[in-house]
Image (tube, rainbow, N blue to C red; front, top):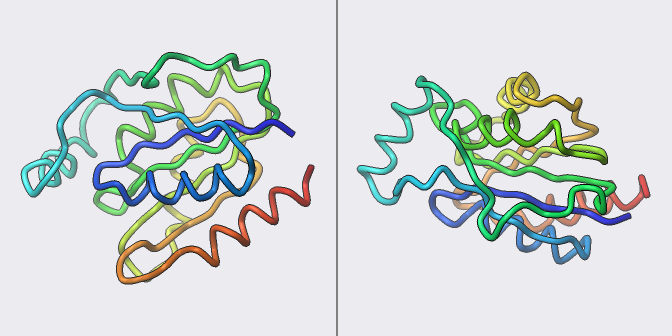
Length: 158
């Protein structure tokens, strides 16, 4: 099964997670963005405010993949204000009609609580019903075990 992994990362945590997951699944890795500089404290505050605004236009860095060659798509995004980030929601709305395989979501967050509710909110922006999802805490925590478990569960579905 050929997999494409897509991620948006404001701080680098989601990128790191998706690099590990893509390596475990021998998947192609793509980054998407809205082109805004969201770094630092100012970027954090802007991101929180943007969570309640109109969805931005996003693009895949390096250009769009050949969608037809992928049996599975994994989309990762951080949470902002306990919601899927606006960049991730925009990506799902804009690109999910092009997905040809199954969709899986990864939502990263810093809180200890599970973010399944936030993931389910992201479903509303997708033209495809996700097959599975992973809610992953990143603060003061090594998510390696959960990443491996998620990869293994996806491999069982092949």
